[in-house]
Length: 157
Image (cartoon, rainbow, N blue to C red; front, side, top):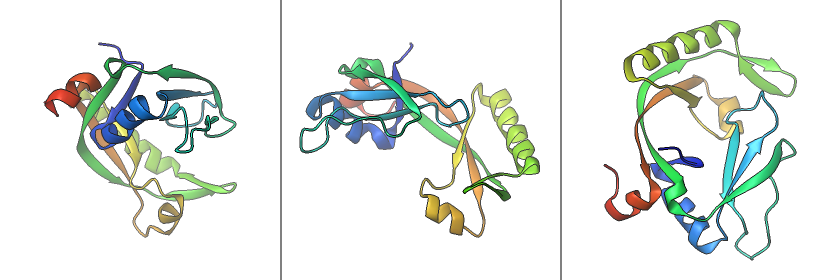
């Protein structure tokens, strides 16, 4: 089944609130091909009822979702934690070439074994990431995707 958006189990309460109480779930597609992830999710309106704009200049026109059946809930399972080395790139940090190759190999093994793979930083907080003495990337695979409408009725499967 194809979904217009996917979220994790941890995001379900927020996504349901956005769909039912905040004007819907807005999917912002990134125009910047170097940015990961390629989309951002958020509510249409803030808590005061004002319409929200894009998260940054990198996003184009949004798509509005008001039906829970159009959102899939991913059940991610941790495959590996990959220690990495970071190097400065302008005002930010990027993976070193060797770390990127190592991450690619682990993702390939995960994909071969489970049919899919994705990676994410150990933390989403940029300050915490800068100060982390042991930076790492988490490689996960999806154990299945359930429509949010079914997840709401029965919980995870």
